Length: 106
Image (cartoon, rainbow, N blue to C red; front, side):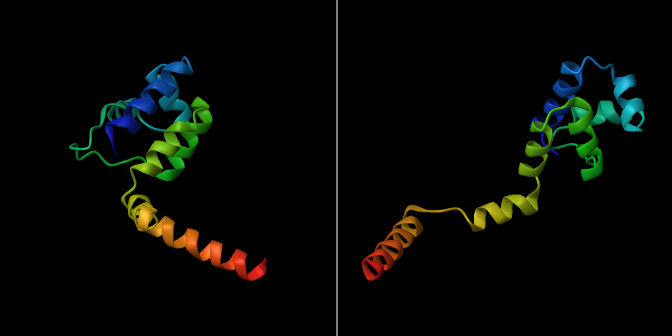
């Protein structure tokens, strides 16, 4: 988990005007666990919250940014995005294919 996710979790809770204890109780976790999630950095070996807990945080804090940042930090999502990143060369190829189709249809 990245520090951006941790910060978003902490800010979401604070913007919801919940103490760590209140939020942890509503999330069904120990306040110390929530505290670790709110202060985790990429170097820490703390276990990441699972997707279900992230979804509950999004609902409780009414903050979808937590989910977006969580997904963006997921190595699988990063690899998929890297595979489909459009380079200028790829964009030029797609453009020429579309232009050729339009000429044939037109």
